[in-house]
Length: 250
Ligand SMILES: Cc1cc2nc3c(=O)[nH]c(=O)nc-3n(C[C@H](O)[C@H](O)[C@H](O)COP(=O)(O)O)c2cc1C
Image 1 (cartoon, rainbow, N blue to C red):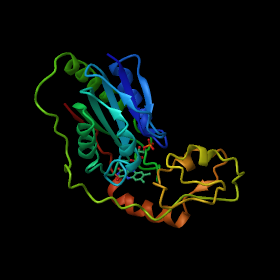
Image 2: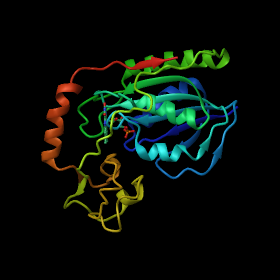
Image 3: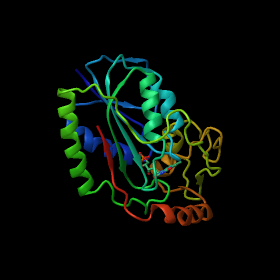
């Protein structure tokens, strides 16, 4: 039996949350990074996978769904983790469950957990915090028990199956500023290869607005337009302001 930690984490919040849960389930995990193309991978029914994705507009990031197609699960057990920025996750878990069912996984547990909002970081600030870590560790114990004593009842998660919330790709792209030293770090790290050979050449059709370019920029040169940030902050304040609880499903 092998443990696989499969993540799509452009700015690190999803990976951090997944790491907290994973380390409380087993000591050693093989990492599969969905930020990059994934080679064809065959799992077995004994394997256990933790699949962790952020919620983008209440859906799973399109790129991660595409890359999961390279994995043939052959009945491997799946623990689903959706990480979101304290607004809502809507159809993220249900869509992830549908994708994993389609790839031949057996979905046995799921969680929706909060991390900092990667566009406006003041929402979900400091999360996952100590209380989240303790809660995730407690959930890991229940997952370990479930792995040892499987049940036949199907996993049920909130959200619609098939008729998902339509995804609205926002029109903004993080642009480079005068602080850009043309080092190419953002282009190298971009999960969709949306940034060309010059930093200002961003293909808006490829860009999924995941904020990875902003997060990795060594000089802090990549930024969203201030007016857009202010508009988003105001809009999100109404729905992200109060602390949301993690949700755990077995
Ligand atoms: C394009 C985009 C859309 C997002 N949509 C949502 C959302 O619908 N609900 C929410 O609560 N957080 C949303 N977030 C915040 C992320 O889900 C959250 O910050 C997550 O931790 C990011 O994962 P990462 O740190 O691994 O990149 C969004 C972030 C981005 C970049």
